[in-house]
Length: 121
Image (cartoon, rainbow, N blue to C red; front, side):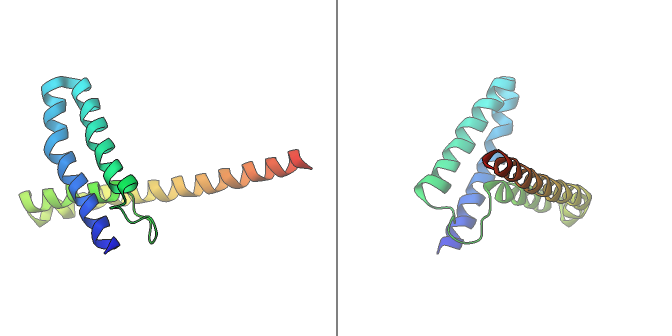
């Protein structure tokens, strides 16, 4: 049931992001974009993480993954499968960026732990 809650929570977040955020930003400019981000992401984070719809006990999946999948699938449903194929190079770059960020964060944690050990010794 938790996995279903994760899928539903992230899908709902994705639908709100792509249905509302752009309209707020186009109507009210930068302030509208910030407001939409605060309201949409804040509310969905509260529901998904604090209330507990989101799966925090098993495989960790961030809301951003669900929002990204919702955006890609919106393009696929609207413009056809070719839209998904056209998105593949961008997805590869995003995945490589995520891997690079993870490696850098791990190395930084190692460095900081080593420094802390040196200070303690």
